[in-house]
Amino acid sequence: MKARVLSNRGIASSVYEMTFEWKGKKPHPGQFLMIDCQGKTFLKRPFSVNDFEEEKMTILYQVRGEGTKNLSQMKEGDILEITGPHGNGFEILEGKRVLIVGGGVGIAPLLYLAKKVKAQKLYIALGFKRETFLVEKFEGLGEVVVTTEEGSTGRKGLVTSVVEEMIGEVDIVYGCGPKPMLKALQEISMKANVLCQISLEEKMACGIGACLGCACKVREDKGFSYKRVCRDGPVFWAEEVLF
Ligand SMILES: Cc1cc2nc3c(=O)[nH]c(=O)nc-3n(C[C@H](O)[C@H](O)[C@H](O)COP(=O)(O)OP(=O)(O)OC[C@H]3O[C@@H](n4cnc5c(N)ncnc54)[C@H](O)[C@@H]3O)c2cc1C
Ligand code: FES
Image 1 (cartoon, rainbow, N blue to C red):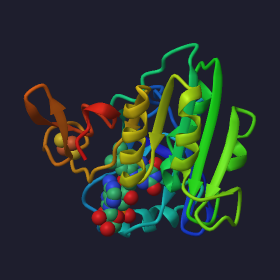
Image 2 (image 1 turned 60 degrees about the vertical axis):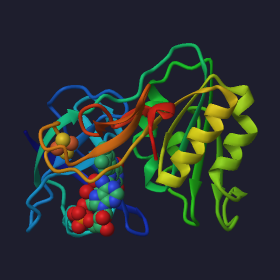
Image 3 (image 1 turned 45 degrees about the horizontal axis):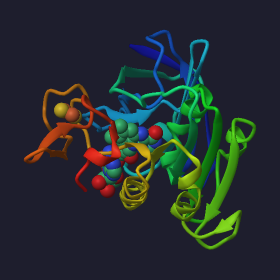
């Protein structure tokens, strides 16, 4: 479907927040959209729903290659071609003590999740290399802890150190971020026997389960098999993923 850009602004070095009109299906937290980034990019690119309210969709993205560079140059009134929402999204268990963990631009799907999760208690841990962004939007939704690797803002160190400290106080962890962070979440939550859902990123082509281009390895009773991140995910129970 076609969507009209409402705003597109840089909020940190090479990180942008874009809003556009959305008359399509209401998304579930953790779902993603496939966006035609125009120019010479042939395939649509996947972006998580960062926020959604009354026909207005927000995405948060980092410029990585041609597609995201083109996106960053779009202006109010430009028209985007989008499909979705795709994927399963996070499973929301009501009345739990929840810890949401994001790393870098991986915090993108976690804002909408933090708004929709019906938690008894909500902790939010956001980790960045140095420059922080979007933190103010999470404040007020739960108890927020920020970490930076060099300690320029918040606590010094990795966001997973917060998870190690807090794992005994929560019933479920939701995470999105770089693979090493997700792997650490898997290890910490499995050791503590705490539920954990992680959102995976793989390069995608079709985005609808047809090309098998986004396969990830999952544990089976007798060995392993493959699932499609676009169709079976992008959210998986941490214990089933084989990194
Ligand atoms: C389900 C899902 C949700 C996503 N949500 C977001 C989001 O909310 N915000 C955001 O900034 N990005 C998100 N991404 C990643 C985003 O889709 C890629 O950054 C984007 O497709 C890059 O396109 P490009 O044309 O700019 O770069 P390309 O020219 O295609 O690639 C540039 C570089 O980025 C790497 N890259 C491309 N795609 C991915 C990917 N999927 N994962 C890791 N590295 C990749 C390439 O290997 C290459 O090094 C998501 C990916 C998935 C699978
Ligand atoms: S991107 Fe084609 S099957 Fe997932």
